[in-house]
Image 1 (tube, rainbow, N blue to C red):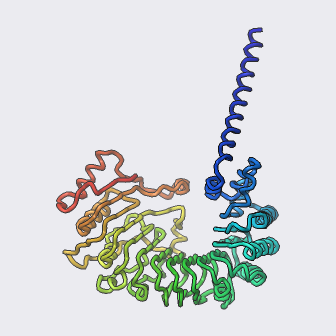
Image 2: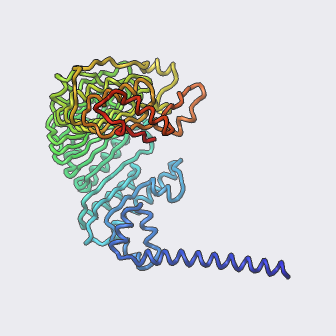
Image 3: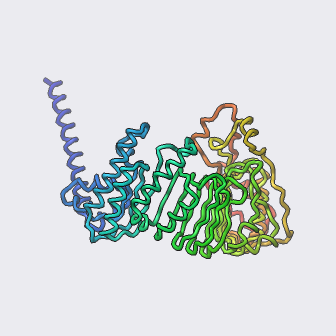
Length: 496
């Protein structure tokens, strides 16, 4: 009897516990649903759209909020995440893409038309029937509602690494067909991201002339044929990204509102020419340098845009493809530069050459440098490196232009991948000597990548010697600032 009573008591306690948790959960949901509508909408529009919709069906009071949402991000990836599914086959892809199309139509047709759509982003695969449905739904929304920001992100069934010339042409043909079906939709788009397409010579200019409200355009592995030349003109475009592709040159002819330009992995010698781009302030160039890669001279590249304020150069842990130049040549084009990011410089090489930018940019306020051999992203096989023209590591020759050079505006230096060796210590000392108003030097350890830890044992990674203890950090501060009377050791911060 005692054992039975004990068992009965345990069950009663467990049941009571579950009921208490359920009551607590119901109370929590009830408290949430009783918040004012404006607060609830603010919260719901900060989370994933599908999650917001699922939350709205918790109660009848919240169900009406579905029609009052003004920000939507409807995308394939989110849908797969909710269903814990991976797109491994065409039937699976087609099924989820169809759901994205149906969901887009349902959301846009059921909402309160008096509330403007602040943001609409739809990410989906380029499949005819689904594209038609999405185009029709968005066209109807644009005709009956105010749409402030509309974006299409298009995926293709064949990824960029697997695309053949025929695939690229096929994708472009499908897109052009859809594009011509719904010009009214594209006329209202503000953002567009296309991938894996090889257009005709006039296709991209035609797209831009139709998309009159376009503010952001991204072309990933898109071109108009090998060695094609892209001529760009657009009155509203603010942001342009070009990734990969086979353009010989991109001419930014007339883009009066362009503010940000990003070009990743160009194929030929001269990636960009600048025409009328009076608002351009941020330029990002990313490339994997090999033996045949032409060294860019910033004095020539930026001759027509001497108002750049933010410059980002990413070398992908390979050859340095920018040529250090003397201040007399470079200063006229870097006079307004304020922020410089130099990413993925190869490990084991002298970084003193980066001072050439400091010497030529009197307005520079912040310099960020990342030194990292990102091995899982690099070609590490010696035979493949030789076959494809990858370079052996080598120091860049550079000498200071003047022994008494001082910089009055640099206030922050950040280094990722810092190691307590002569290369880094000497560099930090030199910057502290010339930057007389330095306020902060942040030194970080190497970046950590989990995939790099799974490399073959034959690929040796030199262990980090970054200082860990307070004693090690204090000793290093003293070493760096020794006999530097103008600098305080307390501006140096070890952040890792």
